[in-house]
Amino acid sequence: MMTVLSYALLILLLLSSAVLILMVLLHKGKGGGLSSMFGGGMSSVASGSSVAEKNLTRITIGVGVIWFACIVAFGLLLRTLV
Image (cartoon, rainbow, N blue to C red; front, side, top):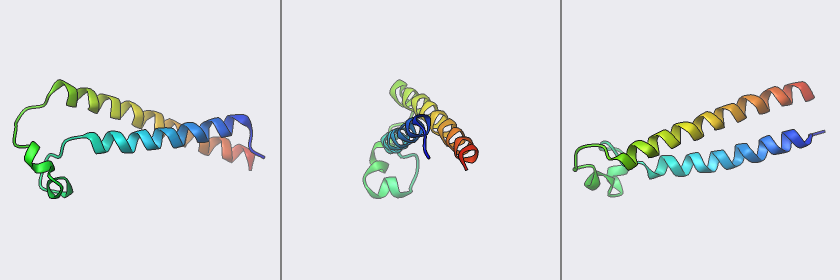
C-alpha cells in the first residue's frame, strides 16, 4: 500500500525527470555529435560561455541533485514498505 509520501515522491520524481530532460536539451552543443547533425554545430562557432549558459548549467545541476535525492528517497521508502 502506497502512502501519501510515496505518491508525492513519485510526482516529484516524474516532474524533475521531465525538467531535467528539457534542461539538458537546452544546452548548446560543444562538439561534433548529434547536436551538430541538427544544426547545433553552427551556433558553437562563437567561442566563450555566456552568463545564460552558466546559469543553465547551475540550474541543471540543481535539478539533477533533486532528481537523485528523489530516487534515493523513493528507493528507501519502497524498501521499508516491502
